[in-house]
Image (cartoon, rainbow, N blue to C red):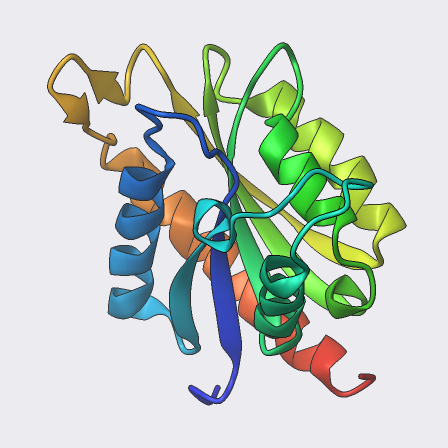
Length: 179
């Protein structure tokens, strides 16, 4: 597979004290070991997106859509809030439409039950946006993979990330042919 394939690692949380940047960089580091595509961390927070429906400066929305359009697939780093995804991620998903279509995605989630409920909610949203999400799902536990000192993922997750990356790259490559 060629490094011409571009995958964005989407950080969906924007709150103070978030851990998604640490998780995203961990995923990116692993992809450098075994990924066959080019991976980059894409932080929703850096786009200063307004809430959907607010009249605001459109430059952040335009930059967000341009970034998404340049990518062939995504790995969403998803935190669980009240059994769902963060409001900032939902807003970011809603502020783009066409750039999502016919692309592949993987999900790396974290929360008290590994963020599984947020990941399942995200899968439904991705389907509506015509994003094909791969079966392999990485779940990080707040109790086992995070400590008072920070993010300390267990080694067992590396195989899950590798499996997800393999599926994602295959799907992203196939879907690129129909865009």
